[in-house]
Image (cartoon, rainbow, N blue to C red; front, top):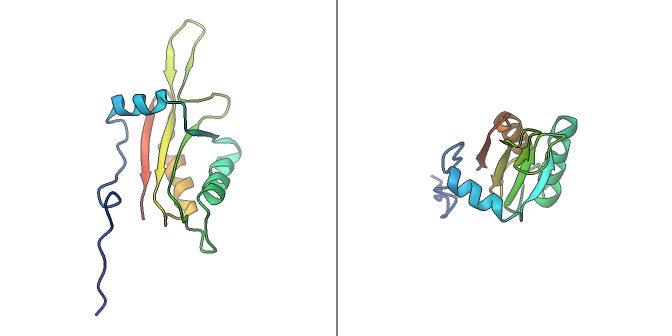
Length: 125
């Protein structure tokens, strides 16, 4: 009989917040400290970033945690200002646990990236 160890804190409580916690997302994004990755070429940059910065092993799993911003190609950061001075938000703040599959990171980024809103997506194991 094998025992399963519970996930250690904070991994045991980490989760996607989607559009919730907007104030916290805005505060985090105001720091301008996150790497920003475009969704160009069918999220190839996201895949490469997760593989390289996440120090993925031979099985395609990250060995370190990550946090980075994914934005639509042609736009930068979490927002842009339109010609009529309106602010349009866009992008995904991704948090990734060690042990997450790189392919899952890409799929979650693809599913979460939407126009005119930014969200947080957490990729656990």
